[in-house]
Amino acid sequence: MSLSILNLREQAQRLAPDDAARFRRIYDVAESEGHLRVPPTMAPWVERTFGSVEAVETQRIVRISNLVTGESAIFNELRARRPMRGGTAPDIQDELANDPWAQAEENTPEDLFGRLRNDTALTAANVAKYDAHHSLLVFAEANPLRFDRASVRDCVALANGWFAAAHEADRDAVYPFFLWNCLWRAGGSIVHGHAQVQLAHGRHYARIEALRRAASSYRAEHGANYFDDLATLHTALGLGWRRGSVQMLASLTPTKEKETFILASTFAEDAADALYDTLAVFRDALGVQSFNVGGQLRPLGETSEDWQGFPCVIRIVDRGPLGVRSSDFGSMELFAEPVVASDPFAVAEALKEQQ
Image (tube, rainbow, N blue to C red; front, side):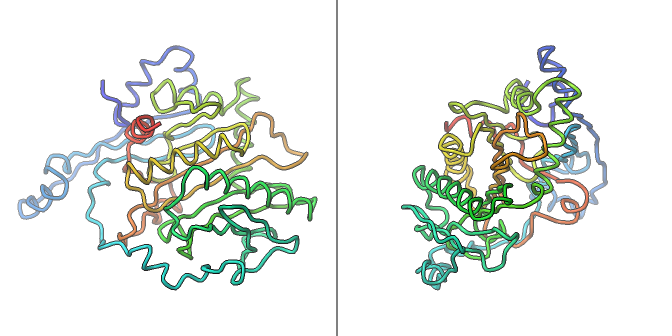
């Protein structure tokens, strides 16, 4: 049986008993068919665009729901063949002709506790903050797609240095978040390569807190660590693999295309290497030009909430070709649930082949 999201239910039935039990308590799979009639006048366009009239008149749709976190995704492979408004992607070097951060130290503000730097980046206070503590890591290499293993390691190290400095300046700020929006499709307002760091008061950011609560409830109900079970189950399905001490997986309920998870004990060098490996495959093998990275991290100190068993969780998604003018997000994603074209099994295969 070929590995595909379209036959996930059959694959789940072949799992070993322990893994089958994990699957049942974490996921629900619903399958349906969509039907329509294509008029003869439309048939030539349908065949050119989607391959055949039959493929359009009977469409197989798979909906996968995570019963623990409430995340869900709808898969329809035809969505990948939709006609998209596009054109030639702008040349990144041309876009950098008037780079406002060409002299980053002179043209960015700094935090009150000072500016941090290493060989890869320097910190800059964000002019329009998401939170009281919110800064940029401005890369020395302006082209955001020219990263390597050393620069990603340095980026993570600088982020940790900023978290420590911000926490030292404000001991009540303990909830860290790392993000990297690469280029305009991913929400990057400036082309020059940069990541971002935040530190919150009072409680963690809503999606991270929701994940913590879901994992805590799962442990209380099943006596098992949710993240361990998630990794074990994805590995049993062929969607998970290890890279040293780090667990990686292609998500069954992706937020958007090609979502990949990295689960590490800490936000440190091993996690940075896994992040580089993933992004390098995205860029070099899968043609990804724009992406989002989110580091969902534990608090820096003691808090009133239970963070037992919560790892460093890094999530990466592809945001589509730079020349496409259609948005990959619409009302469905904002107000209902994601609709995804990329098959997690194909994503996992590409990532595992290169690592």
